[in-house]
Image 1 (tube, helix red, strand yellow):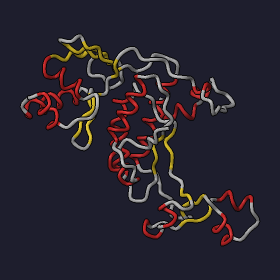
Image 2 (tube, rainbow, N blue to C red; image 1 turned 90 degrees about the vertical axis):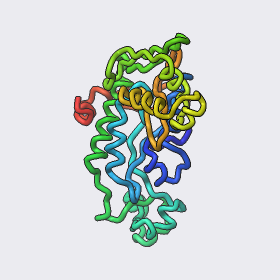
Image 3 (cartoon, rainbow, N blue to C red; image 1 turned 60 degrees about the vertical axis):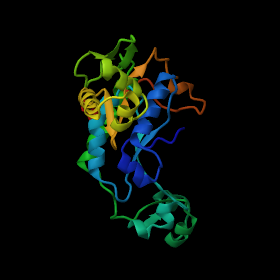
Image 4 (cartoon, helix red, strand yellow; image 1 turned 180 degrees about the vertical axis):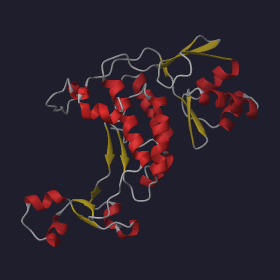
Length: 274
């Protein structure tokens, strides 16, 4: 488990994760190329987060639907000894023991506070879902449905013929089914297999910065590149993609009362807007 818990730079900085959204996205892309199933989540509910960040991630998700979606969109929990517990006042939190403790232990609230490992915001301090988070939840559900439905998966794959780069795109956001990149555009896209800045690309390929930026802008407009923090990442996968393990093959096991019909549940279709 690589510890992927978000795709937005500002949210990751708020978590103090020590990584970036493009680094996490790069990991998802490379894992897909090697047939590695990834256990990851998108966390929300942090003190100080902005709903706009969720709205921005929701706008980006159609670009990523050829990659493995998160296992869940999860509200964070507050654990004993974590910074949000030891410095709760600094973050504007007033924490109480999770409700389950009172249902198990017949102790006064003060004793439960000393006993508990899991905490929640005090009643009345709930962090409500804004429109950006609601949109993100809908997009993640759609992403998951398409990736796991058993139908044709979304494809964004490249084939390098040395003189030109051919990209097949069947994502819902595709501007065309087939892209062809030649010359400098081809070289730039190949260099962006890992995230790069325009300045590093111009230096490495001995190209004028203005020309580099023009090509990057055009490829970003076609959603072939992701951009955050002044860096660019190519999204297309390379080569024949290996099949991913089915969740039922996971050594830790899984449990579902109706494993074949979960995605047909009306409530899930409603969340996805299907």
